[in-house]
Image 1 (tube, helix red, strand yellow):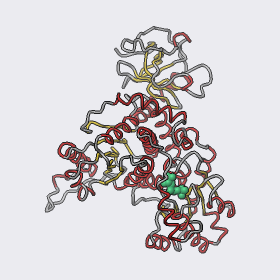
Image 2 (cartoon, rainbow, N blue to C red; image 1 turned 90 degrees about the horizontal axis):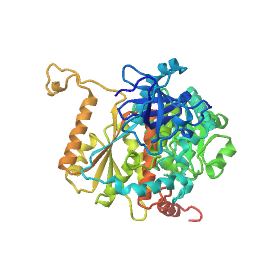
Image 3 (cartoon, rainbow, N blue to C red; image 1 turned 90 degrees about the vertical axis):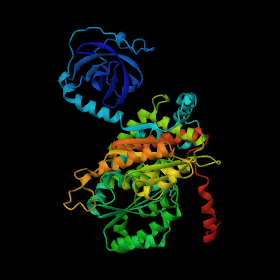
Image 4 (spheres, protein in one colour; image 1 turned 30 degrees about the vertical axis):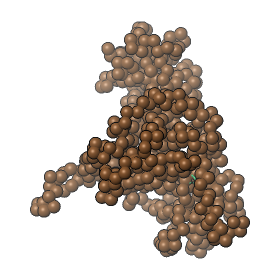
Length: 551
Ligand code: PA5
């Protein structure tokens, strides 16, 4: 039965956005309660009225003819009818009560409905998890209680490393003024410079680089070039960057939470020196932007002395969880990417994945699969992409999972490949070597650009059978063939995590998805996800060998 105008029906709240709540019905229809239809009172937070998972009664204000989408109202019901149903008693048999047609503002809703519905569908499907090729039959229900407990631990900040959980609510709690400053300074950089030099390492580098490359490609056609430094001691790399920058109009964003990381500090000293020689110390001050702790560290002292524009990395967010703070957002905004949309994607992911129901939360299902494989003879998670521009997302993932989980003799070793390139190198091992790994593919359904294979009269290369086909089609077939080979013959489980497209909104959601999955995954192993004690050992040795005072 298709619902129609004026019906009063039961539905389940499946999504909440700042503009309304989405409701799904047992007969397959979906609809939107626009925020203006929630209550007669001013509605600041929709979740004060309804929550995801609630079964509620709503009134149908109208039906979109083309697709039967419903425009819904909660406030059109009186209090008694509006009450949430504690037990979803008749979700299978929706009750209907006829009431008179007296709604207002219907036209406004009608105009906006398609937009809202399409946006909602996109948001609800932001990240798809396909585990049809994992070979094993995992009983997710076995993890129900543990997942519930850990989700509570994350939200109530009661687990190990609880001082570093600021990222969990950051998409709604971020500093709005700081964001405006980031956007303003980024416009200044785009208007006045040809290059932005981003100087940082680890969590102070990989989020920005991976986003910029994923959204602009590796050879972008943008007026501002982004150059990375500070992630190596390589004398060749650094000398070449310095030479490349010489005579060019560049700004610098130095990023370091501790403000004392040696790779970053040395590179910054060198590029700052070049900048000051080229444009003078005073002008250089206007071209240097620093992202660091609000009060401590050598970089903060330098900023105070020199008066550089400074962005803050909050105390309760660690490096590898900081991509959605100024650490990532300033260079990303300089690259012309809409950082508000990125936060919007992360916000939607936050709403969606803060959900302790293992039956419906894909983020935690992914974490559970990792845990299951870890306990069933797998020691390597291989992140796979089919786009070279996504290979730094794999680097970001390797740092996130490696530094978060690899402690106390535990954890999966995160590794990565870019296919089809690496099918001609590591593909052999994956197919027939030691069976120690599972693959996690990061798939983007629609590439940013595509190209058709042309006709060739002579066809000496034998490629005319692909004439007129796009490279995305070929890439897709390569992926399908590889999954089949690895799963069916190689017995390597494959998880596919896909985005419909690569844009600011989706990558924001993707980062949040993985950070939350990583926290869950680490806590499932009883590991503190937010420290990195092992990183210090090489530093101590290096400082000793370099003759640093006190080592
Ligand atoms: O995740 C982390 O905390 C680390 O990878 C750091 O981001 C990295 O070591 C860089 O540290 P800092 O920002 O203090 O220079």
